[in-house]
Length: 102
Image (tube, rainbow, N blue to C red; front, side, top):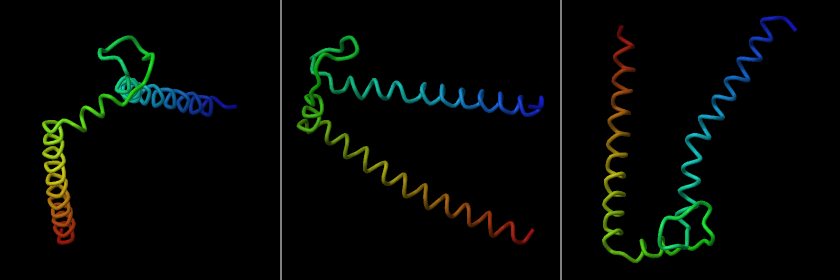
């Protein structure tokens, strides 16, 4: 194996390790949060929870105040998504058409 191939292989391994650590850094908190959201205790305790329950989701689904907030958030998200899609498409078309004349 030549020195160039060895360096390329080591660089590939280093890149794979960095990507794996970055994904772990981003995904691990999401997994812990998802598991703790199923905790049956009425307080935040040590991980892992001794038993699992959907009590917090039931409380959320039965509280009108939270559901109104969820509806508002979804409406805003839908509106912003539509506006972003339209404005992004218009900008892309403008750039594409303006570059033809250059």
